[in-house]
Length: 244
Image (cartoon, rainbow, N blue to C red; front, side):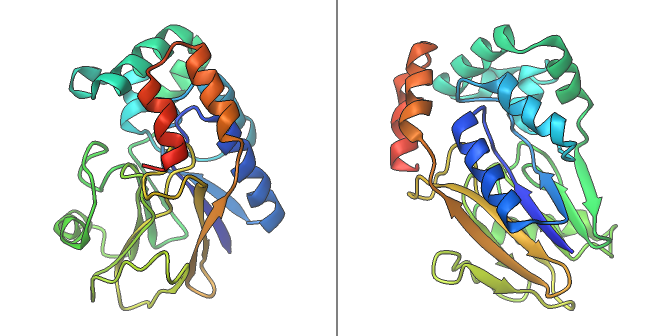
């Protein structure tokens, strides 16, 4: 089975459309979304509609929780909080209810877990190998989980229990081994932070046990234009071209 993994779409319609077009070209059997359809950019309803129309299983991200009223965005940075406050006014009630219904995690393919931030919390970041290894205790009660896919950091990442290799840029296709456990981030669709502005996603082949990290060009200028038209913070527009 070939599974496309997407995360952190963040109301970026141009990036989402470009990624879905490339995913359709690759013809996976299934698509899974690791959350944060809301936040940062100017098309929350359009992005949520795309995911809902396709019936893509989706976990709840921290920005999703804030937009639908489950979390207070008081701890968000100023620019992120401003985008949340704007989107609360923009989002349709049916999309708010749909976000509210998204689960904390999704188990799939029998041995994979999909979360937003980490197995312990959608708000926790996994940035390095030590962060990933600290999360293993939360998987000890789910011994059949060998691969945990996560988002939130906006950085393509590959962390192996038996080694801290994370060379996504130099090795975009990685081999997984059944006796090992992994934490994998496909990268962000809507706001990459690894200094590569292209939208990111991953393809997981459960038969070959490989993960491929993919990048897609999209119309950044159009997304930036919409941010400015919505009077959202300039910081949100600038970082899209920088990929950070």
